Amino acid sequence: MTDKPCVTCKWLEKSKILVNPDGQVIPCCYLANTLYLNSIKPEQGRNWNINPTLIKYKENKKRYNLNNHTLEEILTSDWFNIDLPESWESYETIPSACAVWCDERQNIQESNET
Image (cartoon, rainbow, N blue to C red; front, side, top):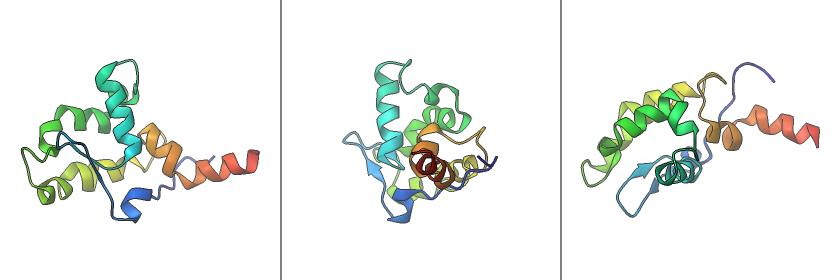
């Protein structure tokens, strides 16, 4: 495996996002599912406790909620446009859900192993 991921965000490619019933805006279901698990049991969805990009989201969660900000404000925020995409530049910083579901290099390697 190379030392740089090749992420093509499946949800971003289709201009989709996920909005929870409570107004929380999350880039995709892959991150939303692990965030939900982490909110119920911190030992689940552990990447939200150790990945700096995901920690930043959790610490500023109210900024990404439609009850507090407009969709435009959320989607043009630094976290959605700088922090998250920059996290895809290294296997040390990429959120695990992004690596599993959207890293083309990882998916190619797994395909070649089967």
